[in-house]
Length: 189
Image 1 (tube, rainbow, N blue to C red):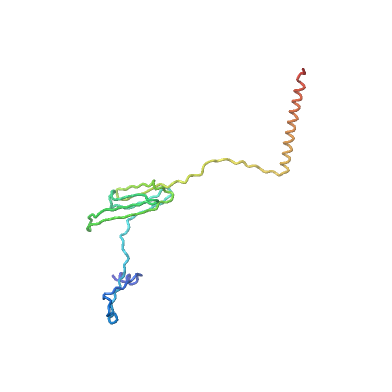
Image 2: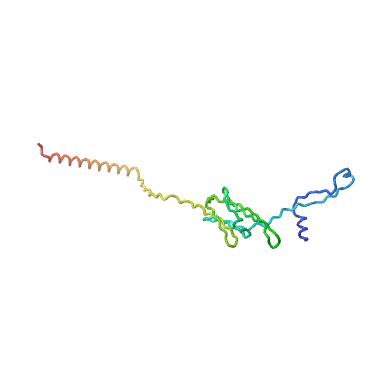
């Protein structure tokens, strides 16, 4: 109890003044009592346990929905999100009656397509939602070996060109000589 009083004293909050007496003509003569009312933060029920896994092969979410029947759970994709909604009406439990409802939204990663999302419910009430990730395509295998040309100094290149010209001239002279021989061997008629 003492710890709660200390928390209430030292926790930063918003305070509002509330008057118990109506305002009127006597305000100048009578001190109006005020009470300080602290606005408490809204308490929420702890969220149901869920795990979202992002590995290199798949996107996966596991959600504990053991208090819901399969027909009370909806899983759908909306734009780039997976939306899970569960709701059941009042049911008796050990403390009286309880009704439950939840909505969870998970954004799909860029490399997951919404039409590949699947869901499954285990016997112990764990809803698993998963989708494969798109594999990056390797670059095409259009392999070609590029030959390496060795550059030579200009003097060597000039000498090679001269040698090629001389070889071509020799071939031409040989062809002319062969043609002349064939002409001289042919009988003249």
